Image (cartoon, rainbow, N blue to C red; front, side, top):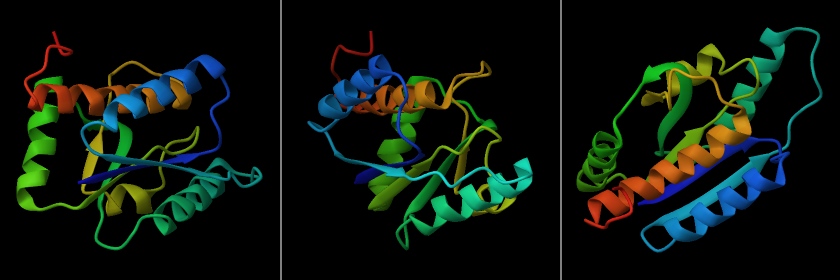
Amino acid sequence: MKHELLFLGKIKNSFIADGVQEYSSRLGHYTSLKITVLKEKGRAKSAASDTDAEGMLLLSAVPPGALIVALDARGKQFPSEKFAETIAGWELQGVKHVCYLIGGPEGHSAKVLQSADLLLSLSQMTFTHDMARMLLIEQLYRAYTINAGEKYHK
C-alpha cells in the first residue's frame, strides 16, 4: 500500500523537517511513502475563500481511487494499536493508495470534509501544521512497527 501525504507549503522549522525526514526514512523499510508539498496560494480577503481554494488544491492532487484521510480536530482519535489495526485492515481490503490531507490554518473546506473517507484527529491538543506532519509520519511508522511485532512501540 502506498501512503501519500499532501501538505500545503514547506516546513518552516528545520528541527521538524529533520524529524519528518527521519521518520520518512524509517517508514520506507515497511511501505511506500510519498510526501507532496503543494504551493500555497496568496491569502484571500476571507478565511472561507482561503479554505475553499486550499481544499480544491488538495483534492486536485488526490489520485483517482485513493482513500482520503483528512486530519481534522473533530475527527476520530485512535490509540496507536487501533490505528495500526486500521492500516492492516485497509491492506487486507486491497486499498492501494491512501492520501492524508493536512489543510491550512483555518482547517479543511466542507468539500474536503465531505470527500474524506476518514476524518482523523491526532489529539485534542492543538499542534502547528508542521508538527502535525511529523506526528502523522511518526504514527504511521509506529503502526507499521506494531503490525510487524517490533519493540519500537513500547
